[in-house]
Image (cartoon, rainbow, N blue to C red):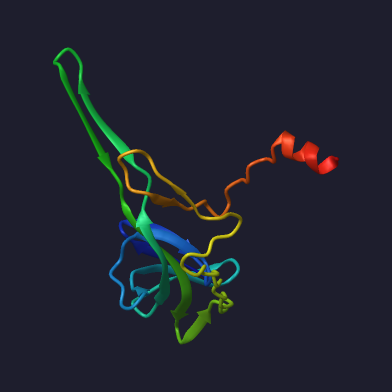
Length: 165
């Protein structure tokens, strides 16, 4: 089952479960409906021109901006150069349902992702080092807090020789 829809001046061949990037459509709470359906295929090999009864619906998965396109205007021998950049807004839409002629083809539900819980360190506690103070002449004494993933200093050779004896 697939449908051909028109969105943002372009045509897309979509099936339930597909994710397409379209120019940012007007959505209602993350839901999008494409009413401009050009053709529908319910079976392999048969394509039916869709009338006003076909409807494709989806949900917005992501919104962002595309890659930058540089537009450079140039006229030789006239000292005319103009450079402009453009980034097109887009929405990634996952097709959830294609309805046509009393039939409805739905995409399978996606499994819910579990949120990862980050461990929060208590204020003043740091792993892997002690809190040192450093003061420069004419400056206030400040606490130097080592980073949690910072490397520890290597033991001095003299201290290692004493431990061996």
